[in-house]
Image 1 (cartoon, rainbow, N blue to C red):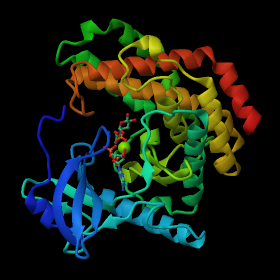
Image 2 (image 1 turned 45 degrees about the vertical axis):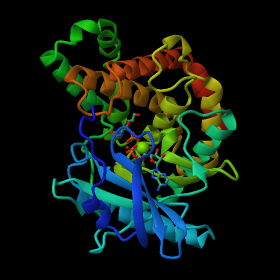
Image 3 (image 1 turned 90 degrees about the vertical axis):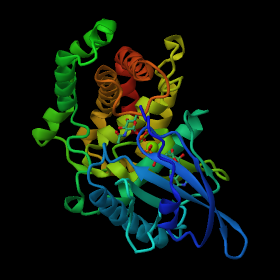
Image 4 (image 1 turned 180 degrees about the vertical axis):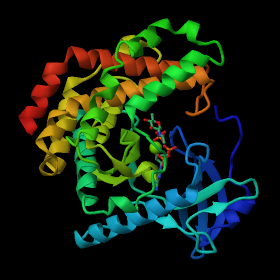
Length: 370
Ligand code: ADP
Ligand code: GN1
Ligand code: MG
């Protein structure tokens, strides 16, 4: 749980050149990892301007310099492409606001790492899709994002979190924590433990294909949930893909899958009432159509065939990560109530179970649009 208050101090605010005076900072957004703030400033001409200030979670991202090198490299590449397409590079990708000393982030007296972005105005982030069109727009946006980074030199990217979506390793880690059971919580969750143990072989499916050379590594986002896209308030289309901390070489199936796990649900990721949680095949269909319309040509036949596996395994993996964090004492994901990670785990497992029931329909949908 985020027990410490990480509000930006005057020292932190003074480290960045906001082009005017910072009047204050308010907590912003609903991310589980970083501490995010909107900084309100008055510019020299009297106008108001917001900035997005984040304290990078260095428990999760051990090397903020590497992380910011990735972000700078990728956003420069994206800006070039956006400019060539006649778009607005200040709104269609993240723009790092450097520190007064020209660095990509500031390290405060306590060792906290802070970075600042231009605030993308005129957009909104959804915690859930309100309709299929919105979710299809998200699919197009992430599909386009993949295409824009197709020619990015993957070997220049740092691995900001090692083995991030290695589902086999996530399973091993779960087993290790379960065996240690440091807080004695395992006894409370036998059904959830059994759910994972019954699917151990599944955890290896995509990693085995990768190792056999049957699936390629690409430059992927790795955290493609709906609230990591800013949609354009004017058009409803995707405006900007954000949260670039986990850009690394990865499987395209994970990007597709993570979007589905979060967005093709009838309820929030942390809904405590499981009766409200269902895998919505209509939303899955909308995203698949949007994603394949934007990214389809880039994908191999094997990748397309495996898209349902991406959805199922990212959902299983995420549920397993929430369960592991619950067993470990809630040290990774920010929680806002007791049992929060357990609620999150249960929604993910409910979705996995329903995907299994709709497995054939999931494949048929891919074939329809592939
Ligand atoms: P986390 O890694 O904790 O999820 P994010 O980078 O996703 O952090 O930011 C959290 C939230 O802050 C996002 O979901 C979005 O609502 C908002 N946000 C992030 N960057 C910007 C930006 N440049 N402009 C406007 N809002 C942003
Ligand atoms: C975290 O940073 P955020 O809130 O967008 C997590 C993802 C999980 C997600 C679950 C770096 O995403 O991997 O899928 O929570 N990010 C990291 O909501 O671990
Ligand atoms: Mg986020």
